[in-house]
Image (cartoon, rainbow, N blue to C red; front, side, top):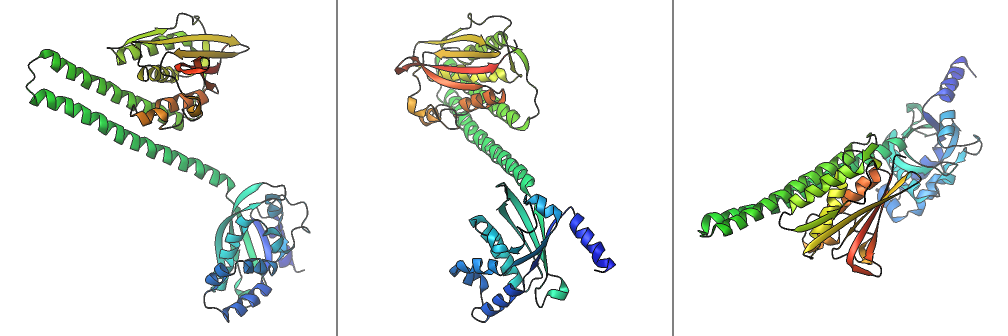
Amino acid sequence: MTELDTIFRGLFEGSPLSIWKEDLSDLKKYLDSLKEKTDDIRQYFDENPSEIMKCAQLVKIVDVNRSMMELIEGESKRELLGSISKYMSLPFQVPPFKEAIIDLSEGKSQSYVEGYTVTKKGKLIYLRYLTYIPEKFVSTWAEAWVLVFDLTEYKAKESILNEKINENEFLIDLMTHDLRNYFTQFQGYIDIILTENLDQQEDVINFLSKAKKGIQQATKLLENVSVLMKTQITKDFVLQPIELKPVLVRAKKFIINLYPNQEIVVSIENIPNNLFILADSLIEYLFINLFTNAVKHNQNVIKQIDITSSQDDGVCSITITDNAKGIPLNIREEIFTRFSEFKKEGKGSGLGLFIVKTLVERYNGRISIESRVQDDYSKGTQFITTFNCEV
């Protein structure tokens, strides 16, 4: 081995890039024979998928470096050398290999493809393969180099980013759709007042009251969207002790002001003072949405909401009980998803309970649903939330 060969060998073995060396000479001979039968290699492989595996058997791995061994969690070089077909047993490994040999068959000296594979220990990783044939071997393909880039972490972040984009698109659609509905209502009420020549002040006040309520609902929608965006974007928040009773007092005042013509009784007398749960400033919206849900779907003259709590070994359980129409058992699993059963009734955006679930998870808590009266869901609902609390 010459001094230059020794230096090259050291660079190969010590490279931080994952590299393997291949002998593609048998593959080239086979592809050349195929070209005598067909002008379209891609179409041929599409019509004869088993031929891909035949091509894999003709590819020989000659050498791999340490970085490649670490990437695929191999224990010895010997187990990796030889035909590449032994790595082609999984369906998701075939497409990138197919694209690579099509690129090379079209006269390209390099191919750049992406795909998944599984390490020797069963870990799924996402890779980008750069296959390169040096100029001196273009006629024979006796030597080819494959550089492998690990994209697993990148793809995970890309997936999170795409999810955020989809969430934001949803919020934009939600605001556009629901706010348009609210504004249409406002315009209708104002048109009636301006064009109907209403004689009774009582009628004018009635329509203005309806418009005011619509504005309150639109404002609540914007608050909901704002809360949801904060829960998605602010991932580095710090939970801190928040006294529960003042939060409930503010949520109670909000719901009574939101429905001034409704008789609403919110009982928080059983909540002790100095009960602190681990949360943040958004906790108030969790209870506002639960209270709103209890009133909005309640046909009783008196809308009753009772809140109780209990503590055990650093965990606080808070139960919100209402006398509304209840939630059937068959939709309780999906009630916290967007556009749930209540949306079908044309009441609201269906976002409120989704925000509740999002905030509960934000605080590392849990939420469940029970009937107020056992075996009769129509008599009201209990939302049972649990949070970590300050002991």
